[in-house]
Structures are given as C-alpha cells and as structure tokens.
Image 1 (cartoon, rainbow, N blue to C red):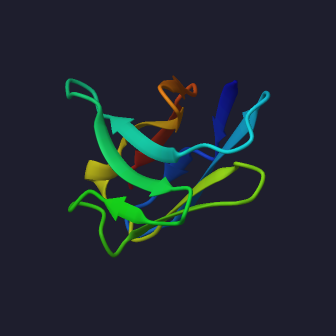
Image 2: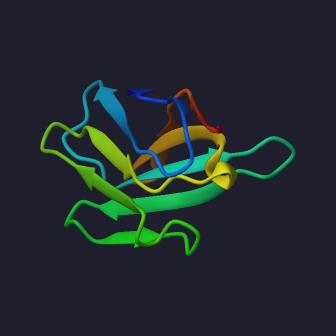
Amino acid sequence: VQLQASGGGLVQPGGSLRLSCAASGSIFSFNVMAWHRQAPGKERELVAGITSDGTTNYADSVKGRFTISRDAKNTLYLQMNSLKPEDTAVYYCKARWGPSSTWGRGTQVTVSS
C-alpha cells in the first residue's frame, strides 16, 4: 500500500488549500485515515482523523477551520480554510487497516504574507 499526498503550497493568511492523499495497492478499506503535520523544530501532531464509518476528530487548533473527508476510493482530503501562519508545516497522511499502517510522503504547506 502506498499513499501519495498532494495539494500543498504557499498561501497568504486567511487563505485556503485542499490537500489530497491517494492510496494505491490491494486494500479494500482503511479503518482509519488521518492527517498529521510537523512544523520545524516540533513533534509530529495529529491534525484530523476519519474512520470508515465517517466519524471525525480534530485537533483543537484546527476545529472550525479544517474539514477532513474521504471517498469510496480511499482518497483522503483535508480542506483547510482561514489558514494561519502557525499552520505552516509538512502535512502527512496516514492510513490504518487491521494491525498495519502506513504513512505517505509529506506535502509542504506554508502560510505567509
């Protein structure tokens, strides 16, 4: 199983971006998919997660601004609105199925004027 994240870039404060994470490989369905991020000098942190039944959870810092979703092809999305400079980080997608999990390569998000 491989995950490929895309959609990062440079955006001004208050702007929006939509990240995508496409999955490939022989997986029927992932139990949980999630976005994590890692800012320079900081530990990787959970941003948002979504289960196979659509239950979502968010870090307090992004609630009301970010929306996580997934489609039937196991493509994961993160709609990010009202972006702040502190959202600047490398964003990684992660998928879990049974006892296994895998990470995708990160995509850089930079929020700056």
